Image (cartoon, rainbow, N blue to C red; front, side, top):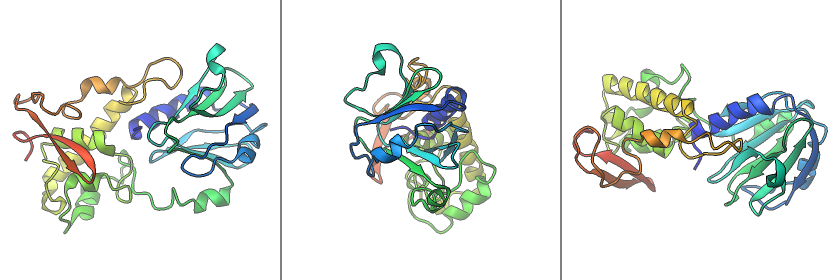
Length: 273
């Protein structure tokens, strides 16, 4: 599933290669995604120019020349990719194809169709149920030890589960929560309210560092957002995620795997406490 670093990687690619381009043609299969994919809305993009590319949590926002905004969420398996040559033809998992005045067309592909592709007016964007209840951005200055300490105060839920709560902090995601907790030496099952301020400060610092390192390496799970196969290099640096039974990189004890809030959670029983 694309997490914040993957979405940020896509956003930066779009900022470089999509902004300033005008839509000359639009195609959609009209299949339902997370919500109805409106053929009328997709076709209304013809003539629009992409003015900017932004990210909020794991949502991509593309302001358009008309004042509307294209809102995209990649869901579990979605991606935006530029296609050229024979690959430009729609495939079974391509749901939107936008021809552009320069360069190859932009394709929204999503095999499991859990994503989102909406064209919204300014009012609709402000009222969007997907955006209005989001927590703070983990790479922002607002996300610090004091913020997280306050959010955790009096809570008995595991710290890993709290980090996945998008109403508190957005986009940390399963992979990066596991990696950050390992780097901070905090066991993911630790009740959030029992973590001291010094340990919370280290956790915040590690979350920011892990996310930034992943962004710098093109994320973990998306490996092809421009047809270049350039992303996904952070998977080579994972310390615990997906390594159940393998030796810890610090103490060589087997990495444990426990399900928390329905998600697989990887950690070292020796190094994390």
